[in-house]
Image 1 (spheres, rainbow, N blue to C red):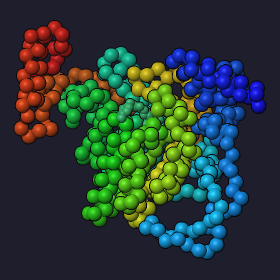
Image 2: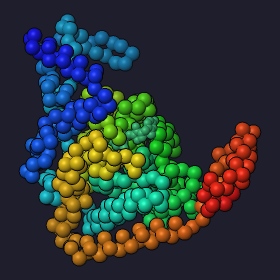
Image 3: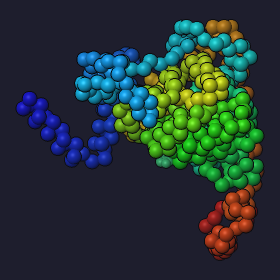
Length: 469
Ligand SMILES: Cc1ncc(C[n+]2csc(CCOP(=O)(O)OP(=O)(O)O)c2C)c(N)n1
Ligand SMILES: [Mg+2]
């Protein structure tokens, strides 16, 4: 006991002395406590050896306390409260913070692309559209990322590793369903028909961009495609989504809302307010959490203490499911079922898709500073959602190597053409910065506009010349 207390004091003292670098080290160790540099470097390193992924120390060390009696009351007597009747017990028992099992992950395909159970069939045409969209998203991400690195656009966010989440969830919805995205769901828009040219126009902030260049790249939106413009202020879209779902319910529409967010988003007040509001108001909304293990450099073990996000559904009184986010067919099935329940039963549903953010957080990030490269590469090579889906369509004889290389070549050419065309278009006028919010500009904005124009004219050398005033 004395030795334990001593080592605890030592750790405490060390921790309080650690600088930010030490802090990062600690974060990495906590998230992957069993991954030493030697293991990561060894050629036979395999994730199956590491049950700790997405598991905080909490789950390693804590077994749920088994209760001596059941949590039901001692007898049939009930007490009446405003929220309903509850049983009575004479034993003082605290409810355990966790179960001694973790909520399993719903899968349709195993790692070899073989179905492991029953699922809603996807016909050949839909499956091939899903596959070609996933590949298009991947190629678009790669080339737009490179364009940012070349200084041609200012910023970019990839969806690498989360292509199945994007495309399969979109495929399970109808066009009347309204999308409230975070920022890693460009594929949902792609599925709905947003063209490569439209993506490029937004990223290049040119005159054809619907936002008139007023948003950072990747902040897409499309009124036509029912895709609400991306707000990257984390989780602010969630309460909006609930409000929109409530309006669909009032109008008795045969449609639902789906809102996407990350594991990090679940730590915001907006998440809790939105889910509770949706539960109480019984709104047809799907809360789709992409649990990719990281919120920039914050690992999931520092994000929450519960068994991920899925268990929070019950806390708010709504149904929830955990899905393998790298299994397109599992996502397609789960979202399809959730959509039906949301609309027919007028209820919100929470989906937690387990996945991994293979790319850097954004082009402003270098994730190798806070997580092992071997970990990233393992996900890229062993758990790639596109490869898995390809195995399934090839197994069905719907796809072959020649079609694959043709698709990749033509998609690459199409993306490059879109980038070149977007780059050639003029920028929107600077004056547009002040339009489209107020009908009549208030005095403070009039003053700012005047000041901006004067500054641009006075110091032309400080500003790009290709912006019309
Ligand atoms: C309200 C708010 N706080 C902080 C940020 C900075 N920020 C941008 S993305 C991000 C992490 C989000 O992580 P997660 O929700 O897991 O999504 P992921 O990037 O992993 O897809 C943070 C903290 C922000 N954009 N908005
Ligand atoms: Mg995340």
